[in-house]
Length: 159
Ligand code: FES
Image (cartoon, rainbow, N blue to C red; front, side, top):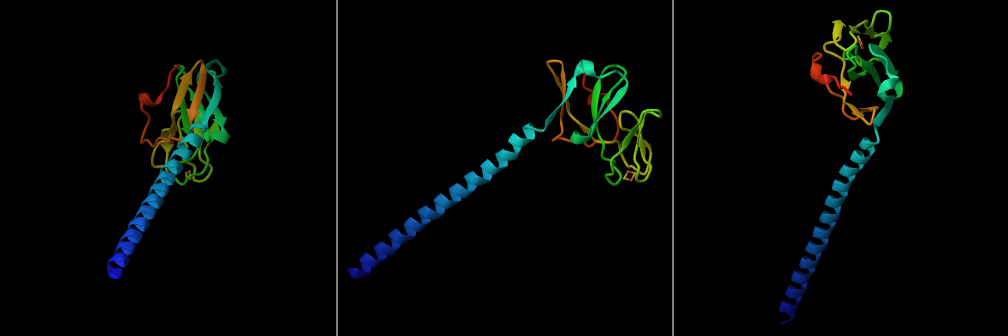
């Protein structure tokens, strides 16, 4: 009889330990998923407000070093946000307004106004960031750099 009582006690102990382990797993999973959500909140704070549409002259390039991009306003009024990170080894390109080209000071790659390679060793066009235009303002989402091989008209955003 005492043997059966001990067996029941051990069964109940294992059941209790199983419940505790299950609860810990549940807490661990909920922590994992809430940790995943936090960066999205901070990501949404990385929308850079560049300025009003009317602030940017046509056929011009405006550096946003803190946002790590150049805002390009094309001659047809479209906007692009071109990454300043060279696609060769990652140096920061600079804009040469006279020549209307981006130039990399490290190994002399150059890119045209829309970021296409003019001269290597850069293997592909400069990355871009999505441009969002709303209520007359230009915003750039710096959380999503877009890797591309070359320029396509779909990469341009219009007001
Ligand atoms: S890092 Fe730009 S050309 Fe090498």
